[in-house]
Image (tube, rainbow, N blue to C red):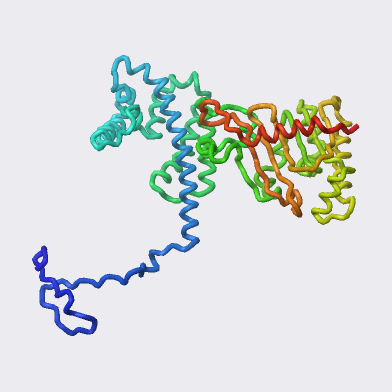
Length: 413
C-alpha cells in the first residue's frame, strides 16, 4: 500500500511479456530508462554550445558595463543628494529624497533590503543601505528629481537621459538572461562609455579615441599584460583597426622594420605631410636595402635576388619625398640599420602614458602581411582608475628596443 492509499504493483514478479492483470486502484510504475540513454532532445551539438557561449560572452560584457555605470551613478547621487537630506533624515535620507512620487519604488527597495538582511545576502556592511538596492532606473529618477544638484557637474541633462534610455534595453535583456544581439551590445558599450565620461569617470586621452578602452580589458587585463588585440594577419588587423585610426591623430610616431609597408602602403604621403605639419614628430627606421640581412630574408621568403631590396629602397625614396615637402624636415627623420631584423613595430605616442603599438615578429617563410599582429596599449586612460602598478608589459620592451636600434643606426640624407 502506497503513502497515498493506492496499491502498488508487485516489484520483481512481473516481466516483459507478462499478462498478469493489475489490480483495480493500483498505480503502474514506469520502468527506469536504460543507463546512459539520455534522450536526443537533451543533447547539445557543437553549434548549440557555440551559441550559448556567444550569449554568455555578450551578456557578461554588457553586465560589466552596466555594473560600472550603476556604481558610478550611485556614487554621484550619494555625493550630491545625500548631504542635503541626511542631516535631517539620517539613514532614511533616500526615502526622503524619493518624495511622494517615488514612495512605491523606494519602499520596494527598503523591503528587499530587509529580506536580504534576514537571509544573510548582505555580504559587505557597506551595502547595508537603501541606496545600494536602487536599480538604474530608480537612480535616474533621483537624479531627475534633484537635477539642480547635478547641473553644475553635468553639461547636458538630455545627453545623460538619452544614454540611459539606450542602456535600458540591454539592462532588461541581461536581467532576464535573454539573447543580446551584437548591435545592441555595441550600442550599450558606447552609451556606457559616454555616460562614464559625462559623470566624470571617463577621461579624455588621445588613445581613448583612437583605441577605446574596453571595460572587460580593464577588469581582467592582468591576464594579458598590455596586449589588447591579436590578429592572425595584417589584413584582418586593418579591417578592425584601419591605418587612419592608428596613425591619423599621432603626435609622435616611431617605426622599425624592414620596409614599413603598414605605414608606407596604407597611409598616404599627403596625410603624412599634414600629420607632420600639425606637429607630429616621425622617426622611421628601415633595414638597409644593401645589407646582407636583406639577402638572407630574400632567401627565407623564396624571393628573387634583389626583389626585397628594391621594394625597401622604393619605400625609403617615397618617405624622402614626403620629408622634402615639409617646412621642418628635422621633425621627420629616416635612418637605416644593418642588423638582422627581428620584428616590426609602430609605436604611436610612445613617449606618453597613452600610446599604442602595432607589433609583428618576423617568421621564416612567412611574409609580413601574413604574420600574426599584436596591438599593445601603453597604459593609462582606463575606465576604472586604480593605483599605478608597473605590470612590466610588452610596450616598454619594444620601445626600449627601438631606441637601442635607433642609436646604432645611421641617417638617410
